[in-house]
Each structure stands twice: as C-alpha cells, then as structure tokens.
Image (cartoon, rainbow, N blue to C red; front, side, top):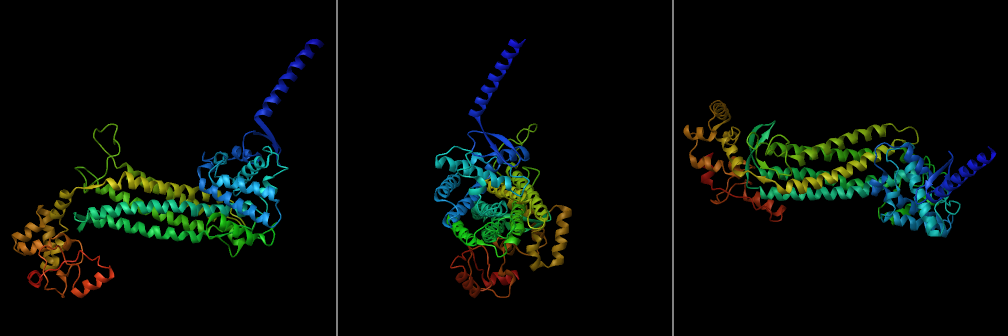
Length: 539
C-alpha cells in the first residue's frame, strides 16, 4: 500500500511539475488589486486588459478596429512622457523607452494587442490600461527586460504618470474625432465631385419636377443633381469647422479636473508637447472640471453626422424613385446594375447601393440617439458613459465614410438618363400649363389642366387647338431654358438683341447681365436674349 501510494504521489508530482514547466513557457504571472492571473507570455497587454476582456464581451468589436483612437491615445501618452521627462519626474531611460514604444503604436504597430471591447464600464479605464500595459511591456523590451517585469517600468507609475483615465481618454477621443473627420470630409468631396459631373452631363436633359409626388413644373436633370451637390457642400463646411470644437481638451486635469498629482508646470508643458506630437492646435480648456464631465462637443458633432446621414438618405430615396420601373415607375434614370435582385423574379435588378446608404443613415441616426442618452447620463464630475459615446461616434464616422465612397463609385458615376422618356413626360404633363399661365391667365390654365386630366389630352395640344397661342409663341415658351429658370419673357425690361440660336433669357437687362458677368468673372455663359418683337408678341 505504502509503495503504491508513494508511486502515485511521485507520478502526480511529476505531472504537476511538468504542467508548471509548460505553463511557464506559455504564460507569465501578473497580479493586481483583485489577485493573480496568468497572462500569455507573448502578450504585450497585461492583467488589467485580461480582466477587461473577460468582463466586457459586448459588441465583439475591440478597440483595435478603431486605429485612430489607438493612435490618438498613444500620442497623448507620448506627450505626457516627454513632459514628465523634461520636468525631471521620469528618468531619461524610462522616458525614452516610453516615447519609442508610443512611436511604434502611432506608426500602426502592436494594434493587435488592443483587445478590450470599446463599450466598457469604468469610463474608459480598461482602454487606458490596455495602452499603459502595451507601452510598458514594449518599453521593457526596448530597455532589455522581459514583459511583465514592471519594477523596471510600470504601467501606472511610469506610463500613466501625471495622468488619469478621466483626462487622457477624453483628450484622445477628441483627437480621434479630428483624425477621423478628415477621411469623411474627403469622401463627401469625392461624392460632390461625382454629382457635379453628372449635373454638367445632364444639364440639357429636360424632365418633370415633382412636389409631394405629384407632377410639378419642368426642370433639368442637371439642376436636380446640382442641388444634391450643394446641400452636401453645406455639411462639408460644417464638418471642416468641427475641429475647432475638439481643440479644447482637459489633459492635465487628472481625475476630476483639479490637476491632482501633477506638477504645476505640467499642464502647460504637456499641451505644448501634444501640439508638437499631433500637429493639432490643441489648447487647455478654460475650466478643466467642466471639460472633464461635459460631452457637449460630442453631441454637436454627432448632430452634424446625423444631418449628413439624413441628407444622404434623402438623395438615396430620390434616386430610388427616379430609377423606379423600368416600366411601372418614373424611370427618369438608370442606376448601374450591381447584382441580381431576386431569387424568384428573373431579370429583376434592385437599387441595392441607395438601399445600403439608407440603412447606413438609419444606423447613424440611431447612434446619435444613443450618444444623446449617454451624454445626459453623466453624473457630477464625470460621465462614465463616455465609452458608448466614442464607440458610436467612431462607428458613425467609419460608416458614413464608407457609404459615401460606395455611393460615389458604385452608383453615382454610373447613372445614365432616359432622355426621351424624361422629355415625353414633360410634354405630356399637366404641370406644363404653369409655363403658359402668364400668357393665357390663371383661370384658363386651371380649366386646361382639368380638361387634360379628364381627357388624357396634352395641354400643349389643347392650346394649339383652341388657338390660345400660335405655334411660334408656344415653341418659344417651351424652350427648355425658359421652362427651367428665370426669364425676361415675364418682365417689363426687354432687350432688342436677338439670338435666334440661343435658348433662354436669364436676365432682364444688359446691365443686369454685365453685373452678373462681372460677379461670376465671365462665367455667365448661359444668358441669351430675345428680340423685343418676340417678347411683345408673346406678351
């Protein structure tokens, strides 16, 4: 019995020893306030990141999916390290190792080590500690030590010196917005350029305008595309100005904005270093306590993204309507066919790109509501819900950027016009009677519209048959440019200059035209004049 027991114990002890040897090859032991944990030996993150990974398995989207936030946070750490070195609180050896590790992260290295879910409790502490641990462990290697030997370079004592999550995380978040805003602005600019090119291409295409989904007055397809470009231009301008909103940060305020545990000179020096590291003209907030808890700039920015989303969705809606058909809808335009549209209906092609833009807009609008609720949930000196604000803002920025580029490349650039269909709808429309109203009167025009609706006859045909105007006058009125813009056909000031090959008169006098030509530096090339005889005959 004793011999057998001794043999078993010896075998078990050997198994335990072998297991311990294998574990030591695969893991390193770290400890914190809660206790001890085994961390993968090759990992640059540490015990606090490991706990956060276990605690917050929510979206399945780690912070590594948002490189702009990682870069921004590494820049903040670098600026802090430089400031602490210059003030003499951090040794050159430690400081240089921290700076070198930060530079690697800024360059895009080690991003696979940022594994914490962006939605997390703790007001961003897990994200901050993930960065502190990665910088510390990479810094240790640079100094010639092993990962986890924190007595040489500590995540909290050294990397996080003069800092709190409550000032570095909001500061990094604001910088991330600035960095992520530029790609979106560029994507919107590309979309506008594509719309402008289509506006020029379709400038001659006369089509029927519609209000409340009912026939209205004519316009050109180019005017429609140009309007979409202009409305997006307004959003571009607003987003270009938003960088100023994020330029005031609370770095140096530490826990609640009082600057506890910092050198009196630190706040001024760290801002200088941050400007140098980022190239962004950041300044210290006028009230660090207010800046630590207030989310107003994030709400403003989210509102701008929501506004852009609404406009993109409206454009997508318009394109879906205008391309509806091909035989039972408007069919003004053709969208590029991107994929088969139905598993049961052969030959069907759906407007999948505008539909995807719509859905992107819906998500961004939903994100804005989440941001609003999270901002409202702040309490006293801190808003612990900031992680969900950052997650939704960065998600909205990425989605809108991708959606704009998709819209440009896979939809707008490939749109063609059904010119004959558009012009036929104008000729056959009841709304065209509006163009004749100044010459035959509102009451007679209303009667014609009613008769056209009842009989299905053309308004123009009825005007000819009733001899309300002769064909020459009708032809002048029906010229595309006279139907789609201001014209001195309806003014008292008339010109004696005639351009029989021209299309329309946009100004009421030569003086007006010269003024416009001067204002537009000679770009007023679409102005045409009719003779006094022509105008008098019509009026």
